[in-house]
Image (cartoon, rainbow, N blue to C red; front, top):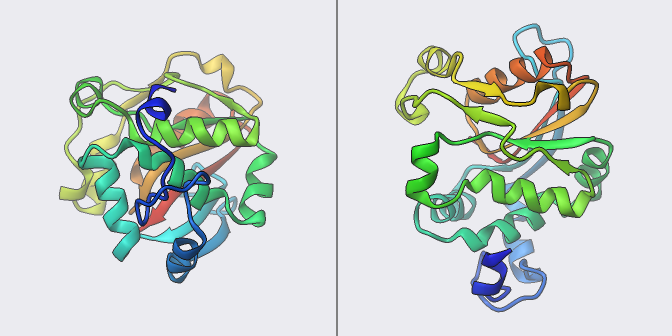
Length: 213
């Protein structure tokens, strides 16, 4: 990847050179924000996804680094976030059993402005590490919605309704799917995407995010 040639390997938390992209000192520093829970939603009739992997709380240094990653042109942080997400054996082993990984897409115009989809970069790295297929550009955003952060829970649900579609739904049929996004707040976006994936025949869906707000 071009980003790997442009940026040297650094720990994304302290910005010091580190071949593993997360140094031991910073690994201990972020430990206080860990959740590391796998929630089972199979009996929740309001959710289309089956599991949610809760990795970190959206607080302090975690929040700062995600904002840097999304808005301050620090695309190289995707390598550190991938290490943070998969560093526990519990999470790694759980995700390893899935067939494919997708990511929540951005509206085309917004991706062009930012230059990258932050969720896509991390999903690609997770795909490489786990050895599972990345379904790139299959799930697309077809409506330019309002920013979710400016809306109430009910407004968020209406905002994303019918905003996404699958280009190749046949690639989802009978597959166990990881759906990746950067932050989980109310879950409206990932639930809407999960509805489409289940309609296409996904047998199981796990929601994975860096942090939960």
